Image (cartoon, rainbow, N blue to C red; front, side, top):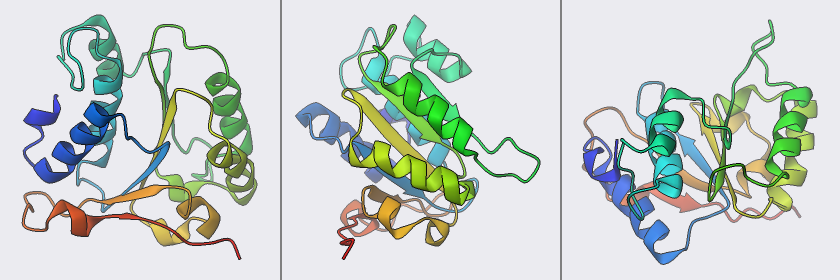
Length: 187
């Protein structure tokens, strides 16, 4: 889906598209909201807009890049999900993502790492991930998806631009009130 098709979170979609048009995207986003609020769909749309072969600053949903991202098989868009029996994201998963993110993109303009249920990062994985957030690879955007941002390390939160997703159908809150850059210091 393109940004214009994202009616559920039109204000968020419009702001992300404007940031993309202006070349002012953050290197890391935290999409926070309850399950089913469209965080993953918006992350997919952003990944498509960054790498669409036919449209600039949006997705066409038809080119090879958009279809591969939609199908979850694009080689430069990484989906990291809890996989272990304990429903944790392991340090090995984070290290594999970091290794891949530091390689040259195969076919994308911008690599995208999407961490689903980021609140499931193990302590070791969280600490390893901080290095990537502090020194992100060039031409890479990281999107953390979570329903429980309070479970993330404050140092991770402080390095992400927070985007709050409300329940389905809510469009009453202005975007500026819902997107907050976190400026928490480490001190």
